[in-house]
Image (cartoon, rainbow, N blue to C red; front, side):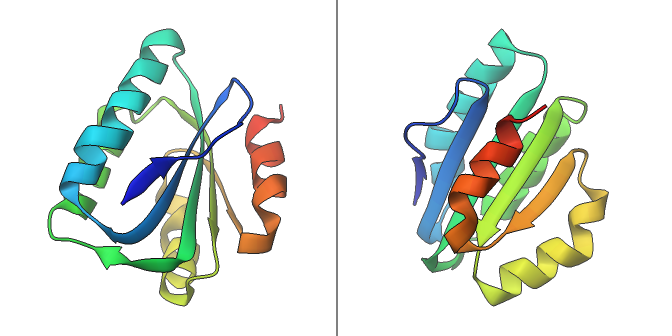
Length: 121
């Protein structure tokens, strides 16, 4: 499941991932919000929170994530990933440098800091 993070600054879009994240979650929650944000602004700042109740990605979900990223490859300004999920932290540490954005990893307890970093200049 993917849901919007509430009460973020106007320049920041945020999502929380819980349980099993499916391709349908991307297509019905993230993609419309991100496409609408890009229609208003050529650069996007993003906060993704993957909580301890996250169980993984269903087949096809990661492919939707990759497609979305490449569709707007030059539009990602900052991305904050907030998680304590061990394997997600390891993978993002290993591959964060390859993301087409300023990327920073935060612990769950640092969600407010992540939002501040994503919204700062």
